[in-house]
Image: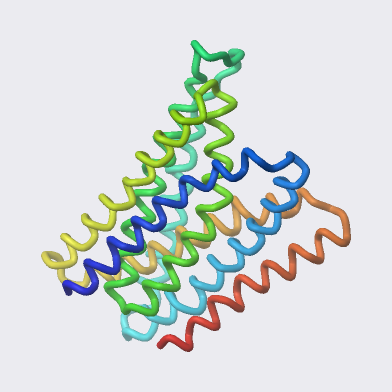
Length: 249
């Protein structure tokens, strides 16, 4: 169990450090950044789908529990993700931004990011409770999803009037909520029997929602044939990487 705690906390800390990736985006042109993000998003979508169908769901199906209950929990995971996203984007602000006025949406974005990272921490810890290989594959999937998301979050804060230093600090502090999520999941696992069985399908539902409603629609915004083919290849590459991690098992 001590090994699970160490690996879980180390993984969520590494995921939190990814919040600093937005700094690198400042040095890139808008055109180059947009092109890179489209490929990252494609790769991320493939990784999330691959982790769901190659690692997470086979683990819970293999436990011999009720298939109907597993399916219901996956649906619950999707619904919870939908509700959280609805709450995050409930408010809008149309005021111009300057150094003295920060868009309220920037703070809503930070709150949403905090909740999202907390859930990531719960998911990663839950995956390590299943097995180390599943924990590693889930951590990688979360990391790949976090890179384009953190670049976007950093851009939102800069646009809203935050200085670069403040945007970096706020993004990093909020990302640490993943550590709290992991600690909560690990704490509950020692007190609630069978909690892993519930966490893994919920995580699968979350990954399905993120990949199918957030990431793939972004990919469809690019209609050029060459770019579309590259996106498909990166999507498949994400799935292949998750399949290759089966070698760890």
